[in-house]
Length: 177
Image (tube, rainbow, N blue to C red; front, side):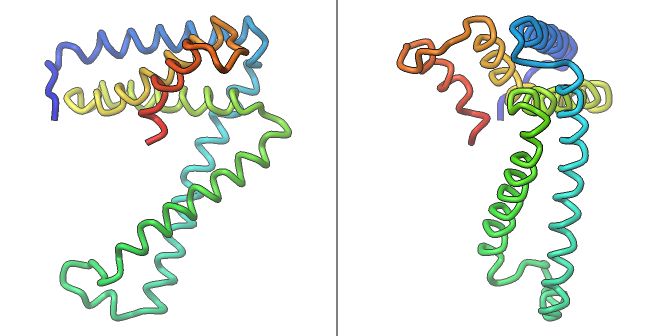
């Protein structure tokens, strides 16, 4: 794991806040974003994530009631846990996509994405205040994403075969993995 000095935390956080503000400004100026709808996207994200966590927890409680022998395992790891993790991951991704598709009537996908990015930025600021040495875990996935979206707003790329578009896809790729 790469280590950075704690003195870098606040400057990097400030740079990312500035980059997010510029991206938000470019999106609002270009008409791709609407301010109230972007805030609604952030609020929806803050509702959806705990809802999905609650659904997953209730489902796991149901599975444990169906298989009470899981509670007696010493390490708490079932012999078939390698199947549960992908199943829960696929379930949460599917439910998230379903909920997002239901919101597309009111909120554009980019507004929803930038709203969620704003929530991530709030988490970053809270982490930099509370646990400064772990703040960069939030920073590095978020920085290329904000930069990519900002460049998309700035350049208004419509030719998907251009080298710039390919470079932007590669820049945003770490967030997809």
